[in-house]
Length: 358
Image 1 (tube, rainbow, N blue to C red):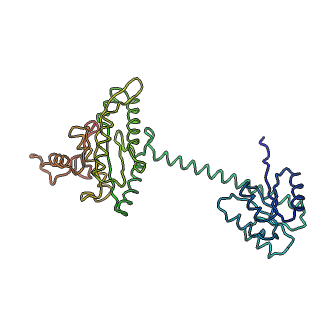
Image 2 (image 1 turned 90 degrees about the vertical axis):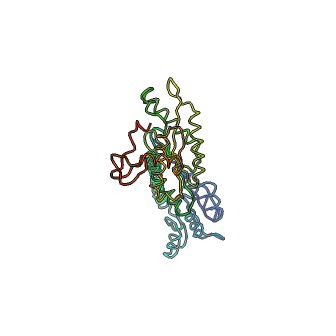
Image 3 (image 1 turned 90 degrees about the horizontal axis):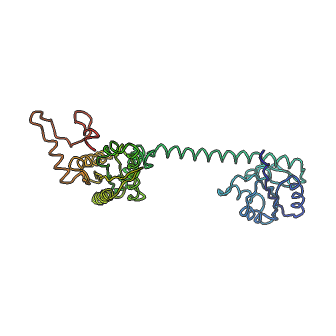
């Protein structure tokens, strides 16, 4: 059985005898009692130690009880503190004024202690319920935050998942359009990743993906977003980054991976990475979908032209490859050229299987 909580009550009265009388009665009921002889001392006492309830005299010199309760109740840093106003003026006007200022209850002098004890117990029960409710709300809020984090995080690598990347890209694109700041994407994946699973097993493949994600995260800035876009494919969103700087960054990542040794249970291995880089503003980029598509197609060209490279979506290499791969076939002429690997709706052929792109 949990012990009964010991509540702290602050008695505020400009007559010391009244404070001592109430202190004796309340301490006999198991309460901890502090006293304050005027309104300012009461506010100072609350700053030092927040009471569970305040028994507050209305008529005091300098700072009266009405002003004290008003200040207490308008202070957002304070929790809910029940306040019982005590006064010798048993008029409706006085009671209304105190309640309007924020008091929770009223008792008239001379104080009937049985009545006071009942009012104190009632307000402390309400406070306990409010504390429990606030705790429950915090727990639910924390749980919701954790659930949202889980829903936006890749379970294996602990970086953003595809859903989170798409949300962040939308937000950053809107920011880019509104403030005319540059934005760039780096789409990358591990070269010949399928062979890792085939030769060493899926546990080794998982370890490589985790290490790869951590490596990308360590090289990115705090404002960048790093996530797993699918399989061994990762996307980095670089706000405020011009295309040239994004290409430099991607090349640095590529060199970092090339020189890195991946570890897993009972073994190590080396792998390279390929990157596709796109950025805006650019004449070819109309919206966030075309930006993402440009980075994806540049990655496809990097894979097709030898791997272990970072390809810029408007580079000579990219343009030459896409023109070459979209030439009309002599036997089956096409109506119009399309970018190699483009995933368009309709008759455009797919980019190839995962094995062909690995």
